[in-house]
Image (cartoon, rainbow, N blue to C red; front, top):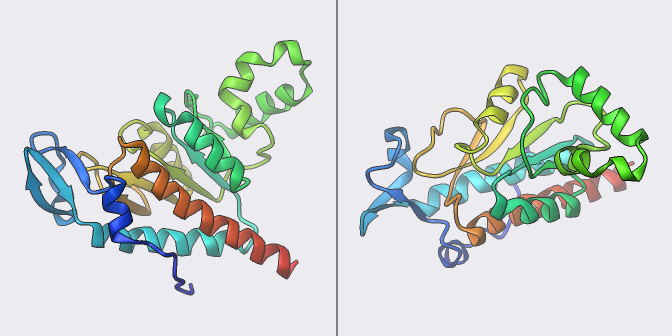
Length: 217
């Protein structure tokens, strides 16, 4: 896989608060290699390591998008819902930004049936389905890569991906397990600015990959 330059700037990440972790009493010891310091009772993430993993993730999604692969972005916390939707729409990805319905991927045949009914319903019957399935309305098969905004919040999603062997990219704060996703990006998963920065880089890489795919087609 070719390595590319994604303009990942440490100063920009600091301004977005990407380096701020959780309190030192609320952490996962597996995150020790990704932590550079403790400050005022919180762990500080090593941004050089974050930049390396973010660059690797951008390379992966660019390569996948340039081959026509499909993505699903998941982030269901209320404060990130709009951010997840806008990022996914910009990159022409599927998304889930409300409640994750258990078995959405592992029971794909059931989900597919729901989606078909959803597409056939009249407007007045759409409200509930639109809330939970609107972002995957036109997903016709399992995604090739799933991007997860918060490992703790979306553990069920990660578990389904692991069962199905779907590659995952996951933002991990200092209370997370870095061994669960295929690419774990150490970052503040609570601050909107931090999540926006990470998603913006990934989305830009996907968009570039899509453009490459169209040119090759």
